[in-house]
Length: 367
Image (tube, rainbow, N blue to C red):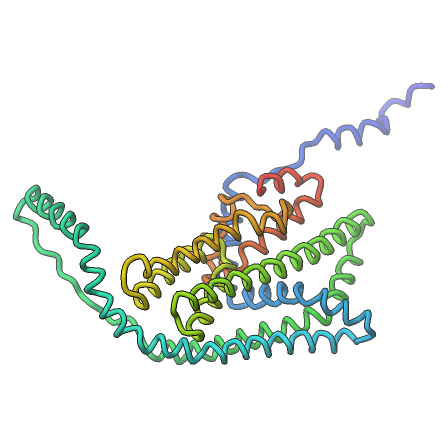
């Protein structure tokens, strides 16, 4: 081949130089600032994000039932209304059945706690003696020139805050209900249109597989965990009934433990504390008082270490350290809703990362 004329550039030179040009990467400071901005946006927009995320996950649970109804020639908008109506009816029935025993226990709790005080005082006597000895040693080691601390009590509770917060809570509840219905009815068509807007066929295939995997795995996970927690709550209610608690109170605490079990680590810890309080206010003697907490602890260990891993396998397994960090972060940002959403959100992130080849190692990091 003859050489190109003078003053011209070979056609291979430009692509080679462009390919060798390194891609610009964000600095550490930019990543930190972006992360802080995202956390602030998540905190500031919590009133909008929490109802949207709750509605999306509720719609994921209801979608398999709606598809089953569609096979029976039930239109999607009617199937969504049926599923949502049945869910609301079950929730209202549960609240109606548990409202009276909860109110009775709240009314009797102050008198029971006053009766509990002498028993706890006798149990904590060695601890108080050790604390008094340590305080005496600390006072002897300090000089007498320190001024005593002044305690100023302020009443931070304002009835107007609770009065103004009620309409906001009702509006959030109504938003969750409406968004759940619209996600169940129009969510799939919206996702299909969004995937069709992607420029490349490979991107469309990967995005569609991610959406299908998230819907399938999250629906399976939530339905399975709900069934397991209901069984755990029913077993705990039966044990409390055998220990001597009335049936309404046994159902109340069984339901509460089932709900707390949705928040890993944090929920069971709160559940053990509540069971200790119930035991010491309902039974006499140390061993009978500890029996409800021990029963709940045994059920939780059996469920967490044996039943759930066997049923769900390793596909939804998440590192305990990553999960605790997510619980702390989302609990700080969004409160109780963050604790309930931590596991589904982490599962969605893990599924999405595992479907993208360049980020598969990050999915392995979450396991």
